[in-house]
Length: 327
Image (cartoon, rainbow, N blue to C red; front, side, top):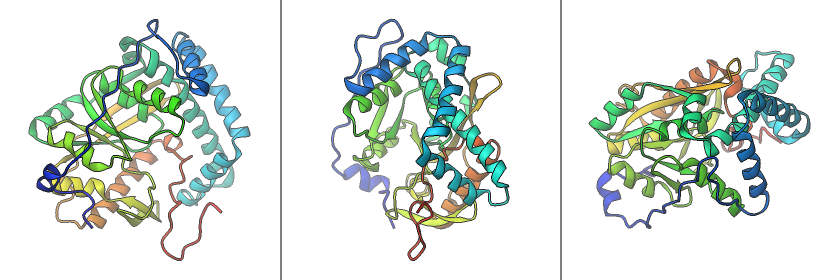
Protein backbone atom coordinates (compact mmCIF):
# COMPACT_ATOMS: atom_id res chain seq x y z
CA UNK A 1 0.00 0.00 0.00
CA UNK A 2 1.45 3.37 -1.02
CA UNK A 3 -1.43 5.82 -1.30
CA UNK A 4 0.78 8.69 -0.11
CA UNK A 5 3.65 9.32 -2.53
CA UNK A 6 7.17 9.93 -1.27
CA UNK A 7 8.56 13.45 -1.81
CA UNK A 8 10.37 12.68 -5.07
CA UNK A 9 7.33 11.05 -6.62
CA UNK A 10 5.04 13.83 -5.50
CA UNK A 11 7.22 16.65 -6.70
CA UNK A 12 7.30 15.24 -10.21
CA UNK A 13 3.54 14.63 -10.37
CA UNK A 14 1.31 17.09 -12.17
CA UNK A 15 -1.20 18.72 -9.85
CA UNK A 16 -4.03 21.12 -10.60
CA UNK A 17 -3.65 24.75 -9.57
CA UNK A 18 -4.62 25.37 -5.97
CA UNK A 19 -7.72 27.52 -5.52
CA UNK A 20 -7.60 30.75 -3.60
CA UNK A 21 -10.63 31.90 -1.67
CA UNK A 22 -11.50 35.43 -0.58
CA UNK A 23 -11.66 36.21 3.10
CA UNK A 24 -15.08 36.72 4.71
CA UNK A 25 -15.68 40.27 5.99
CA UNK A 26 -15.84 40.74 9.75
CA UNK A 27 -18.99 41.70 11.64
CA UNK A 28 -20.29 45.04 10.42
CA UNK A 29 -18.59 44.52 7.04
CA UNK A 30 -20.74 41.76 5.58
CA UNK A 31 -21.35 42.66 1.96
CA UNK A 32 -23.75 39.90 1.03
CA UNK A 33 -25.08 36.45 1.80
CA UNK A 34 -25.11 33.20 -0.16
CA UNK A 35 -28.38 32.29 -1.88
CA UNK A 36 -31.00 29.90 -0.50
CA UNK A 37 -30.77 28.19 2.87
CA UNK A 38 -27.13 29.14 3.29
CA UNK A 39 -28.17 32.78 3.16
CA UNK A 40 -30.55 32.31 6.08
CA UNK A 41 -27.80 30.58 8.07
CA UNK A 42 -25.42 33.41 7.22
CA UNK A 43 -27.91 36.04 8.44
CA UNK A 44 -28.55 34.06 11.62
CA UNK A 45 -24.80 33.84 12.27
CA UNK A 46 -24.36 37.58 11.80
CA UNK A 47 -27.14 38.14 14.35
CA UNK A 48 -25.67 35.61 16.79
CA UNK A 49 -22.15 37.02 16.49
CA UNK A 50 -23.51 40.32 17.84
CA UNK A 51 -25.26 38.74 20.80
CA UNK A 52 -23.88 38.12 24.28
CA UNK A 53 -22.25 34.79 25.23
CA UNK A 54 -25.26 34.12 27.47
CA UNK A 55 -27.67 34.50 24.56
CA UNK A 56 -25.61 32.19 22.38
CA UNK A 57 -25.49 29.64 25.21
CA UNK A 58 -29.27 29.77 25.51
CA UNK A 59 -29.71 29.26 21.77
CA UNK A 60 -27.26 26.34 21.84
CA UNK A 61 -29.15 24.70 24.70
CA UNK A 62 -32.49 24.98 22.87
CA UNK A 63 -31.03 23.65 19.61
CA UNK A 64 -29.38 20.75 21.43
CA UNK A 65 -32.65 19.75 23.06
CA UNK A 66 -34.51 20.06 19.76
CA UNK A 67 -31.93 17.98 17.92
CA UNK A 68 -32.16 15.23 20.53
CA UNK A 69 -35.94 15.13 20.20
CA UNK A 70 -36.40 15.52 16.46
CA UNK A 71 -33.23 14.39 14.63
CA UNK A 72 -34.12 10.76 15.17
CA UNK A 73 -31.75 9.12 12.70
CA UNK A 74 -28.66 10.86 14.08
CA UNK A 75 -29.81 10.13 17.63
CA UNK A 76 -29.85 6.44 16.70
CA UNK A 77 -26.36 6.71 15.20
CA UNK A 78 -25.02 8.35 18.37
CA UNK A 79 -26.59 5.75 20.64
CA UNK A 80 -25.29 2.91 18.47
CA UNK A 81 -21.78 4.35 18.50
CA UNK A 82 -21.87 4.70 22.28
CA UNK A 83 -23.18 1.14 22.69
CA UNK A 84 -20.24 -0.15 20.65
CA UNK A 85 -17.56 1.97 22.31
CA UNK A 86 -18.88 1.95 25.90
CA UNK A 87 -20.64 -1.41 26.28
CA UNK A 88 -20.15 -1.40 30.06
CA UNK A 89 -22.18 1.77 30.53
CA UNK A 90 -25.84 1.37 31.43
CA UNK A 91 -28.46 2.36 28.87
CA UNK A 92 -29.41 5.32 31.04
CA UNK A 93 -25.80 6.51 31.23
CA UNK A 94 -25.39 6.21 27.46
CA UNK A 95 -28.55 8.27 26.96
CA UNK A 96 -27.21 10.96 29.30
CA UNK A 97 -23.92 10.96 27.41
CA UNK A 98 -25.76 11.20 24.08
CA UNK A 99 -27.85 14.14 25.28
CA UNK A 100 -24.69 15.89 26.49
CA UNK A 101 -23.20 15.28 23.05
CA UNK A 102 -26.13 16.91 21.26
CA UNK A 103 -25.86 19.88 23.62
CA UNK A 104 -22.15 20.31 22.93
CA UNK A 105 -22.53 19.78 19.19
CA UNK A 106 -25.35 22.34 18.96
CA UNK A 107 -23.27 24.88 20.87
CA UNK A 108 -20.31 24.35 18.54
CA UNK A 109 -22.59 25.15 15.58
CA UNK A 110 -23.96 28.28 17.26
CA UNK A 111 -20.43 29.42 18.11
CA UNK A 112 -19.42 29.27 14.47
CA UNK A 113 -21.21 32.61 14.29
CA UNK A 114 -18.29 34.15 16.20
CA UNK A 115 -15.67 32.09 14.37
CA UNK A 116 -17.02 33.06 10.96
CA UNK A 117 -18.41 36.57 11.58
CA UNK A 118 -16.86 37.85 14.79
CA UNK A 119 -13.70 39.92 14.91
CA UNK A 120 -10.31 38.61 15.99
CA UNK A 121 -10.80 39.82 19.56
CA UNK A 122 -14.03 37.86 19.89
CA UNK A 123 -12.36 34.71 18.62
CA UNK A 124 -9.44 35.09 21.04
CA UNK A 125 -11.90 35.59 23.88
CA UNK A 126 -13.91 32.52 22.87
CA UNK A 127 -10.94 30.20 22.26
CA UNK A 128 -7.77 30.13 24.34
CA UNK A 129 -4.59 28.55 23.01
CA UNK A 130 -1.58 26.84 24.57
CA UNK A 131 1.43 25.03 23.16
CA UNK A 132 1.98 27.31 20.17
CA UNK A 133 5.74 27.11 20.77
CA UNK A 134 5.61 23.36 20.05
CA UNK A 135 4.22 24.15 16.61
CA UNK A 136 6.63 26.97 15.89
CA UNK A 137 9.62 24.83 16.88
CA UNK A 138 8.39 21.92 14.77
CA UNK A 139 7.88 24.09 11.67
CA UNK A 140 11.46 25.32 12.04
CA UNK A 141 12.66 21.70 11.99
CA UNK A 142 10.70 20.39 9.01
CA UNK A 143 7.30 19.27 7.66
CA UNK A 144 4.41 19.31 10.15
CA UNK A 145 1.06 17.56 10.26
CA UNK A 146 -1.38 18.92 12.85
CA UNK A 147 -3.49 15.92 13.85
CA UNK A 148 -6.95 17.14 14.79
CA UNK A 149 -9.37 14.34 15.78
CA UNK A 150 -13.09 14.94 15.34
CA UNK A 151 -14.09 16.73 18.50
CA UNK A 152 -16.90 19.28 18.43
CA UNK A 153 -14.31 22.04 18.98
CA UNK A 154 -12.56 21.25 15.71
CA UNK A 155 -13.59 24.48 13.96
CA UNK A 156 -12.92 26.56 17.06
CA UNK A 157 -9.36 25.28 17.20
CA UNK A 158 -8.78 25.83 13.48
CA UNK A 159 -10.09 29.41 13.61
CA UNK A 160 -7.98 30.22 16.67
CA UNK A 161 -4.84 28.86 15.04
CA UNK A 162 -5.56 30.83 11.86
CA UNK A 163 -5.12 34.06 13.83
CA UNK A 164 -1.43 33.24 14.33
CA UNK A 165 -0.36 31.24 11.29
CA UNK A 166 -0.98 30.14 7.75
CA UNK A 167 -1.84 26.52 7.07
CA UNK A 168 -3.40 24.08 4.64
CA UNK A 169 -6.26 21.69 5.26
CA UNK A 170 -8.58 19.32 3.46
CA UNK A 171 -12.31 19.87 3.53
CA UNK A 172 -15.41 18.04 2.36
CA UNK A 173 -17.14 19.78 -0.55
CA UNK A 174 -20.77 20.57 0.30
CA UNK A 175 -23.45 19.52 -2.18
CA UNK A 176 -25.13 22.93 -1.91
CA UNK A 177 -22.88 25.63 -3.50
CA UNK A 178 -24.14 28.26 -1.08
CA UNK A 179 -23.18 26.20 1.95
CA UNK A 180 -19.87 25.30 0.32
CA UNK A 181 -19.09 28.99 -0.08
CA UNK A 182 -20.15 29.63 3.53
CA UNK A 183 -17.87 26.88 4.86
CA UNK A 184 -14.85 27.82 2.74
CA UNK A 185 -14.90 31.52 3.44
CA UNK A 186 -15.73 31.07 7.11
CA UNK A 187 -12.69 28.88 7.62
CA UNK A 188 -10.22 31.12 5.84
CA UNK A 189 -11.02 34.66 6.89
CA UNK A 190 -8.12 35.61 9.20
CA UNK A 191 -5.09 34.37 7.30
CA UNK A 192 -4.03 32.65 4.11
CA UNK A 193 -5.58 29.23 4.73
CA UNK A 194 -5.31 26.89 1.76
CA UNK A 195 -8.39 24.68 1.63
CA UNK A 196 -8.04 21.56 -0.50
CA UNK A 197 -11.16 19.60 -1.35
CA UNK A 198 -11.08 15.85 -0.90
CA UNK A 199 -11.82 15.57 -4.60
CA UNK A 200 -8.35 16.96 -5.31
CA UNK A 201 -6.78 14.28 -3.13
CA UNK A 202 -3.66 14.23 -0.99
CA UNK A 203 -1.24 15.27 -3.73
CA UNK A 204 -2.47 18.86 -3.68
CA UNK A 205 -2.15 18.94 0.10
CA UNK A 206 1.35 17.47 0.03
CA UNK A 207 2.53 20.30 -2.19
CA UNK A 208 1.99 22.60 0.78
CA UNK A 209 3.75 20.18 3.12
CA UNK A 210 6.75 20.28 0.80
CA UNK A 211 6.79 24.06 1.17
CA UNK A 212 6.90 23.82 4.99
CA UNK A 213 3.30 24.90 5.43
CA UNK A 214 1.67 23.14 8.41
CA UNK A 215 -1.17 20.85 7.38
CA UNK A 216 -4.32 20.55 9.53
CA UNK A 217 -5.34 16.92 9.10
CA UNK A 218 -8.35 14.97 10.42
CA UNK A 219 -7.28 11.35 10.86
CA UNK A 220 -10.46 9.65 12.09
CA UNK A 221 -13.24 9.57 9.51
CA UNK A 222 -14.60 6.53 7.67
CA UNK A 223 -13.88 6.91 3.95
CA UNK A 224 -14.27 3.25 3.06
CA UNK A 225 -11.78 0.44 2.61
CA UNK A 226 -9.54 2.20 0.10
CA UNK A 227 -6.25 3.27 1.69
CA UNK A 228 -7.52 2.03 5.06
CA UNK A 229 -6.82 -0.85 7.40
CA UNK A 230 -9.13 -2.42 9.97
CA UNK A 231 -7.62 -1.70 13.36
CA UNK A 232 -9.25 -1.56 16.81
CA UNK A 233 -11.08 1.57 17.92
CA UNK A 234 -12.50 0.96 21.39
CA UNK A 235 -12.17 -2.74 20.60
CA UNK A 236 -14.15 -2.56 17.34
CA UNK A 237 -12.33 -3.32 14.04
CA UNK A 238 -12.60 0.06 12.32
CA UNK A 239 -11.63 1.22 8.82
CA UNK A 240 -8.89 3.77 9.50
CA UNK A 241 -6.82 5.72 6.99
CA UNK A 242 -3.12 4.92 6.99
CA UNK A 243 -2.28 8.35 5.54
CA UNK A 244 -0.85 9.86 8.78
CA UNK A 245 1.62 7.01 9.17
CA UNK A 246 2.49 7.08 5.47
CA UNK A 247 3.05 10.83 5.43
CA UNK A 248 5.20 10.63 8.56
CA UNK A 249 7.31 7.88 7.00
CA UNK A 250 7.57 9.12 3.41
CA UNK A 251 8.01 12.79 4.23
CA UNK A 252 9.70 12.59 7.64
CA UNK A 253 6.81 14.69 8.90
CA UNK A 254 6.26 15.51 12.57
CA UNK A 255 2.80 14.69 13.93
CA UNK A 256 1.52 17.25 16.45
CA UNK A 257 -1.87 16.52 18.04
CA UNK A 258 -4.24 19.50 18.24
CA UNK A 259 -7.01 19.03 20.83
CA UNK A 260 -9.89 21.44 21.42
CA UNK A 261 -12.41 20.99 24.23
CA UNK A 262 -15.43 23.10 25.15
CA UNK A 263 -16.02 24.05 28.79
CA UNK A 264 -19.80 24.07 29.48
CA UNK A 265 -19.23 26.04 32.69
CA UNK A 266 -17.61 29.02 30.95
CA UNK A 267 -18.85 28.58 27.39
CA UNK A 268 -15.28 28.91 26.14
CA UNK A 269 -12.97 26.55 24.27
CA UNK A 270 -9.36 25.66 24.86
CA UNK A 271 -7.04 24.48 22.11
CA UNK A 272 -3.89 22.65 23.17
CA UNK A 273 -1.01 21.88 20.82
CA UNK A 274 0.87 18.84 22.06
CA UNK A 275 4.53 18.01 21.32
CA UNK A 276 5.22 15.83 18.26
CA UNK A 277 4.38 12.15 18.66
CA UNK A 278 7.65 10.44 19.60
CA UNK A 279 9.12 7.99 17.11
CA UNK A 280 6.07 7.88 14.85
CA UNK A 281 5.77 5.58 12.98
CA UNK A 282 9.26 4.38 13.91
CA UNK A 283 9.82 0.74 13.00
CA UNK A 284 6.10 -0.08 13.16
CA UNK A 285 4.20 -1.31 10.15
CA UNK A 286 1.61 1.08 8.77
CA UNK A 287 -1.09 -1.05 10.37
CA UNK A 288 0.58 -1.04 13.79
CA UNK A 289 1.24 2.70 13.64
CA UNK A 290 -2.38 3.36 12.68
CA UNK A 291 -3.58 1.22 15.59
CA UNK A 292 -1.27 3.18 17.88
CA UNK A 293 -2.83 6.44 16.72
CA UNK A 294 -6.32 5.05 17.39
CA UNK A 295 -5.31 4.20 20.94
CA UNK A 296 -4.15 7.78 21.45
CA UNK A 297 -7.45 9.11 20.11
CA UNK A 298 -9.28 6.81 22.54
CA UNK A 299 -7.35 8.39 25.43
CA UNK A 300 -8.22 11.89 24.24
CA UNK A 301 -11.89 10.92 23.92
CA UNK A 302 -11.98 9.47 27.44
CA UNK A 303 -10.89 12.88 28.75
CA UNK A 304 -14.26 14.24 27.56
CA UNK A 305 -16.46 11.52 26.01
CA UNK A 306 -19.45 13.73 25.18
CA UNK A 307 -17.45 15.95 22.82
CA UNK A 308 -16.32 13.41 20.26
CA UNK A 309 -18.16 13.55 16.93
CA UNK A 310 -20.48 10.63 17.63
CA UNK A 311 -23.02 11.66 14.97
CA UNK A 312 -20.61 10.33 12.34
CA UNK A 313 -21.03 6.68 11.31
CA UNK A 314 -17.50 5.81 12.42
CA UNK A 315 -18.14 2.06 12.00
CA UNK A 316 -19.99 2.19 8.68
CA UNK A 317 -17.36 0.23 6.73
CA UNK A 318 -17.17 -3.31 8.05
CA UNK A 319 -14.63 -6.07 7.46
CA UNK A 320 -15.68 -8.62 4.83
CA UNK A 321 -18.53 -10.77 6.08
CA UNK A 322 -19.37 -8.53 9.06
CA UNK A 323 -22.91 -7.14 9.18
CA UNK A 324 -23.77 -3.43 9.09
CA UNK A 325 -23.88 -2.19 12.68
CA UNK A 326 -26.27 0.65 11.81
CA UNK A 327 -28.91 -1.49 10.11
